[in-house]
Length: 451
Image (cartoon, rainbow, N blue to C red; front, side, top):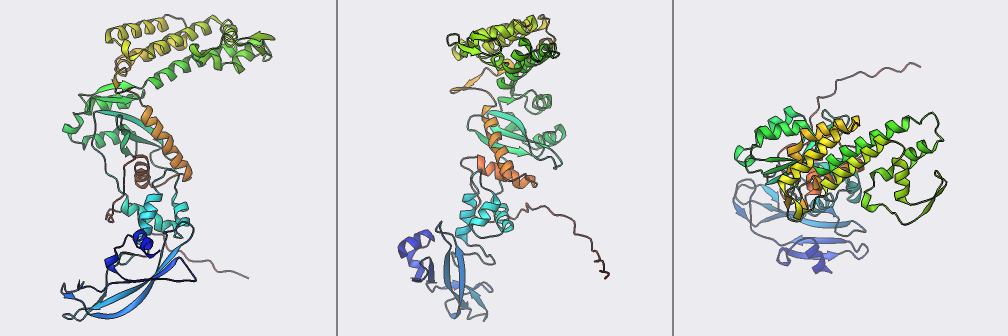
């Protein structure tokens, strides 16, 4: 039993003078360390003279089901040169601290998981939330990581009460590591941020994947002259499907005077078939359609929807044409053929007579080169913002579990600490202050009560 306790407390047998358990409370122990020659903390001379002993009760969490109390018999040495006394150093709790080293490491390890909140961890260790936050701030201060060959840029919604509502996130595409999180995605903030990154480091970046956010394009062209800009294919497809949905709603409004009509009900309640991949459409299984009043397959129901409007039919096939282009297999990618196919799609949209897709053709033409750049593959996957979108999902969960976060720097450390797999905490306390300073409250006089 005592050997397992020594291991749990991360001690060595040669450091222990005695260890005794309390029978009535099997999770409490009396521990005395061995007497050693130690250096005086006042004058620097060595001494082994014992002045007296004092007992300290230290609460630690080494068993999940209950607290463990270590009754530590602390030895006070007396220096024979300067005559001053001082306590021996111990592995349980640092000088001037109330939380043991074991609990500190336990708290930091528990906070690693994205679902962990400061409140839950504080309850587990029977500490105040302020103490847990203070421990996290002093041991988790993550610096920006070096830029890599392929980067992903994106943003996420941080807090509506903060100065900047959308934060900027930068990630390594290959290793799926968050390189940094900046307080705002605004151009003036990011301009200053990228300016302080060494040019040599920025020049090594070859590809940067973004969504259709023009300020990112402008910044990349200024600060990353050697990088090719890639537009995330998911965002382009979403733009195309949004254009189709806009056509559907426009056609549906033409039948809004009679909401019980077959046309209105098909466009209102069966519209999802328009966005389903045509390969996945079932054209064999029949089911009873209450709207049409007869048995039909998914393909037959889609045909009935498309027959409502010629413009809707044109819009649907334009969407299918772009999806087919976007799904070009890796072994069939030819830069010249891709450019030719995209040019034809843009022309088809422009000459379609559907105003929503005429607007879409201008968007595709504007980002034509960036869309073509996204057909580059690394390893087993094509360049996209998929990895960073996945991290954003967990970041949103962190914010949601905390009921919102106010201190951006602390939130940034929590997000990177939680989402970077091999991120760890500092064993020693950092001097940099994370807690924000507020102006002191004004004095006020209490009103006298009148009876």
